[in-house]
Amino acid sequence: MNNQRIIEHLAILVAVDTQNPPRSIDADNQIFKYCSQVVGKDYAIRVFDYGDGHVSWYATRGKPRILFNVHLDTVPVGEAWTSDPLTLKLSDGKAYGRGACDIKGAAACLLTLAEQGVADFALLFTSDEEGASGCCVKKFVDSGEAARYRQVIVAEPTGSEAILSHRGFLSVKTQFTGVPGHSSESRTLADNANHQFAAWAVNVLELAGQKKHSADDPGACFNIGVVHGGTKSNVIAASTLVHWSARLRPGDSNQEFLDQVRACAPQDANVDWRVPFTGSPLPAAGQDDAGAAGFAADHRLEVGQPVDFWTEASIFSAAGIPALVMGPGHIAQAHAADEWVALDQLDKSYLQYSGIVTRDD
Image 1 (cartoon, one colour):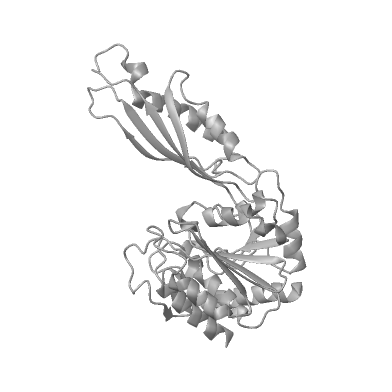
Image 2 (image 1 turned 120 degrees about the vertical axis):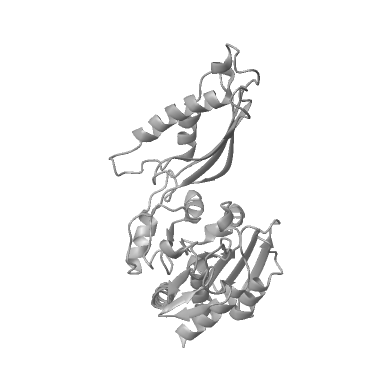
């Protein structure tokens, strides 16, 4: 019965296009109407539309002390699918569809649980996680509403293991500005934006290397992803744009690392630093995992190893609210063509979520 309802809910959730980008969604979107219909009139439901596709659906019943958070947006469908990505397909014990693994499967489990008449239950479904902005969760935390909960469970594909720590994510666009001119001029070495970038790159790669504990250790996961600069080989480059990222260990500070990276630029270079996104590791700097670890032990949850991907659990952690990450599926299936989640993973997560709210009554 529960398994069938999970699949029914998942089929409807997958069918609603919530690709991000373009994140064409507002408070009247069908997916939020459906969630409200499922939980029914016994829930207090609030929908917050912050504009530009940033929407939160928040439903509570009774006096819950645990908050379950799921993002309903997905990455773009992309290519190489062998079936309609917005039509759930069942085959060989797997459910295929965009978002089935990341992470509408968890939402389907929680909606099924809500139908069972749980006395105290709180759900926060958001629409903007895949845009790496965290706007909805940040707004929720800033409102003070999150402070009422002693534990937050953020659903992401973890193989149904409770994850207590993960790396942060720092995305930075660095602009080097030079003085254009003919490449025969003596000032070329100093005034060329590409040269300024190159000098910085040598220094920052050395810095990143120092963050490694061993040859196999990714260290800061520093990566120069995109470089655009210059016009011709005989013209001093006037501008170079570099888009780079880093994923720091739990306990590390994104700001401290950014300050170190900034110091790697040549002393006289004209540099501008823009940070499109910064997400702290979990636990966030200054916090620990004692609360989440105690919660996992109390609820007999299997604790997994730290993961390298970032989640919005760190936003709750930064606010001093214990958070862990746990949901059906594995990250290897997320964002992929023919994305899938195993049906037994959905069953396992449903039982875990049910056990948590039952034990906490």
